[in-house]
Amino acid sequence: MSFRDGAGGVGEAALAVVRAADVAAGVPWRVFRWHRGQAHYSGWYWSATMGRHVVYESRLELARLLLADFDPRVVSIAAQPFRVTGRSGDRARSHVPDFLLLDRDGLVTVVNVKPAGRLRKPEVGEALGWAGGVFAERAWRHEVWSGAPPVVLANVRFLAAYRCGERVDAEMAGRLDGVVDGAVSIGELEAGWPDRAGEVRAAALHLVWRGVFVADLSVPLSASTVLERAA
Image (cartoon, rainbow, N blue to C red):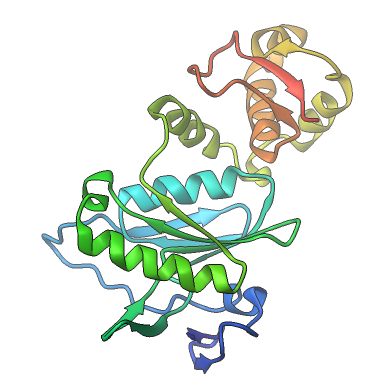
């Protein structure tokens, strides 16, 4: 395995012994370049989980990155984290996954983001199958991701506007955290502070982002959305 440390220096280690946390602390393996007319949409996303920007190479990757940042179990996210090489029969292979996710229970997930149409190509399936076998030997989970329900993604994108605690009234967030102990709608919370409805909504949605409150994200968020404390 090859990876870059925080200063950009190249490190080499056997996958069997490398620490996922060390790899996640580095910088992306590939150097990203942008140019006019490029076929894909890439950029930088500010991650609340990481407290810094994380790169992505396509809108589909951005969608998976948003979901990882929203997941309260995820404690570290790394993009284009490393390169593995090896042989599959008489063929030499090299692979750079899209994301490396570490969760609070120690689970390591390697994510490859691919449009569903590309997965139907035999050569893509073979390459991902080889990579999955390599990661399985390290007891790392391998996820091939092609999308999520549109309403869920729309809701998470909306909630992402409230991910930064510095942009939310901390006093109001503390109040809501202290008073909500059962099911209550966002509209009902706003009605409790009619002169501060905007602050209430922002604080409530920030607490949903943080995983303090949960809501049904399979339907569009609205004033009637019911919030409950996370288990």
